[in-house]
Length: 231
Length: 322
Image (cartoon, rainbow over all chains, first blue to last red; front, side, top):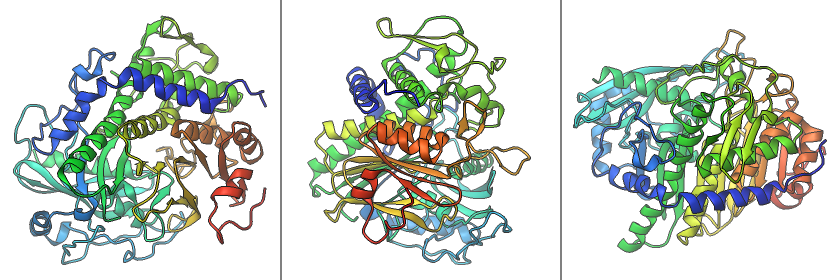
C-alpha cells in the first residue's frame, strides 16, 4: 500500500471551496432557469450547441426532466383526475411499495410481470405514482407545443430487463410519466418507486436508501421511446 | 416528512432529489427555499456539463481530442481531475480515472437521456494510467500524455452533491438531504427532528436493507456490483467498477458504503476500496480517516472502527466480522 501522500478529506474540502468561489456566478442563470421552468417550460434542444465549455452559463443547456413539488402535495388534485382518466386502465399504475407483490430476489428466476391494476387509483398519499410535469431532453427546440396530446408508451431496456413507461401529454407538454409495465430479473417494487416517489425512495423504515438504482436508465429510454410517438 | 420542500431533476445519469426540511410556510421562506434548491440543483447540470464523458461537447471529452496538448480548463474540471488523481495515487492505482475508454469498449457507452452511443475516435492504449494525466496548477491546464478518456463517474457526482450542499449551507439551510441515485448527503435533522435514518441496500436482495444508520452532516455513498452491468452476451457478468490494474471488473466486494464529510471523498474512496477488496479496502478507509462498511459477495461485513462505534443502529449492528 502506498504511503499517505494526500489528505483526501482536506483536498476534497479545498476543491469544493475553489469550485464554489469560481462558479457561484455561473450557476445563477441555471438556477433561474429551474425557477422559471415550471411557469414557462421552454422545450429544450436534445443536443444543445456548446461551443464555449469554459463559459457554460452563456450557452443553452439540455433540460432535465423536472419534478417540482412539496412533499405535502406530491400530486395536485388536478393531476389526480387527469392522469388516470387520460391514461386509462392500461397505463396508470398505482405504486405502493407495501402492496407490491414480493418478487423473487434471485437473479435466476423468470421475470415477474407486474400488471397495472384495471382501475387506477388516484391517491393523495406521497406514494402515488404519476410523475409531475416532466420535461425531456428529446423535445425539439423552439416549439411551444412539441407533443400531441394523448397517452403514449415506450419500452426501455436494461441488462436487468425491460420497463414500459407511459407518458401523458397535456397541452403539448408532459403532464405525467409512469412505469406501466416492468419485466426485470429483479423485483420491480423499488423500480416502481422511481417515477412517483422518484429518487427519495423512502420507506416506512428509513428516510433514504444508499445504493444505486440500476434501472434509472431503462426508465429514461422508455420515456424517450414513448415521446417519439407523441410527435 | 410533511413539512418539507422536495424537488427532483434528472441529471448525471440518475435522479437527483433535494429535500429541505420545514421552516414554516410563509411566502418569504417558501420563495427562499425554492431559490436555494434551484441553485443547489443547478450544480448537477454544471458538473455534468464539464465532467461527462458521454457528451462529446463536455470539457472532459474535448480533452481527449487534444492528446498531448496543454488544454486550459475550468476550475470545476481541474479540481475534479486533481482530486481523482490524488485518490489514484493514494490507492496505488486501484482507483484510476483513465479507464474511460475501457468502460466505453465494454459497453458502458450510452448517454442516459438520448440513448446515444458514444464512440471516442481513439485507439485504446492499454498502458495508459493516471500518471499520463499532467496538471499545471498555475496555468490551470490538463494534458493527456497518451490517448485516453477520463471517466470522472466516481468523482463528479460526489462533487455535485458537495457543491449542492455548500450552496444550501451558504443560504443558511441546516436541515436538508440530497439524494443522487443513492449517493446521499444528509444535513442536520429530518422532519421529526431526529438524525436522518439511512438504509444501506442489501447487495443481493433489493427488498431488504443490510444496515440502518443514523447520520447527520455526513455523506453516505455506496458502490455496488449490482449497479450497472455490461450489456454484452455474458449475462451481465461484468459490472461497471473496473480494476484498472487487471482491466476486468473487481470481484472481492459486493458493495462498499462510505461515510465522509464530503460526498466526493466518500464516493471515490468507496470505489477504490471496492477494487481493493475487504482487507486492503478497509485499511485505505481507516488510513484516510473515513468510515465505511464493505460487504463481500459471501455477505461478510467488514466495518471500520468508527463505523461500528458511531453509526450502526442498536440491534442491527451485531455480527461484524472484522
